[in-house]
Image (cartoon, rainbow, N blue to C red):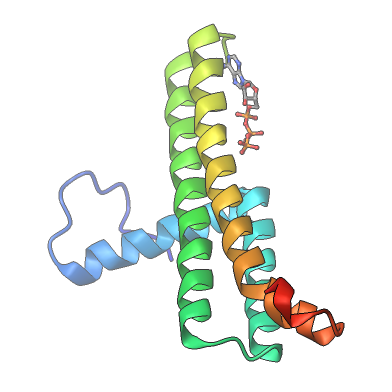
Length: 136
Ligand SMILES: Nc1ncnc2c1ncn2[C@@H]1O[C@H](COP(=O)(O)OP(=O)(O)OP(=O)(O)O)[C@@H](O)[C@H]1O
């Protein structure tokens, strides 16, 4: 997925832009342990959804929740990289604040994903263990 050597000019066509965007995703996947863990968690969530045969709306909810977490993790990685370029390894209290707020955004996205997961999986799991139907 290597890009043309040392390009700094604008991409000339959609294919080139798309290739660079894909290279960006591969870079995040290779270098960010959190992104890999979240990808694994997403796979398990989709596997559980398939096994429990959840409905179309639940699939939509799960896919959007997973994409939201990926998006926030991507932005978090971008912000960390920009901060690191700026401070060049020095301790800076503003760098700490920016990185911590950025990580906070990922946490909020993860909480939204957990709420979606509970909404989707609680009823079928409750049904599976024979719980009372008035609960759901
Ligand atoms: N230059 C800096 N100045 C001050 N604090 C910093 C600096 N760099 C990092 N930190 C602090 O250290 C923490 C870890 O920074 P690092 O860049 O390693 O993030 P990370 O481990 O990749 O985070 P995440 O788990 O969100 O991906 C930050 O959340 C921040 O609190």
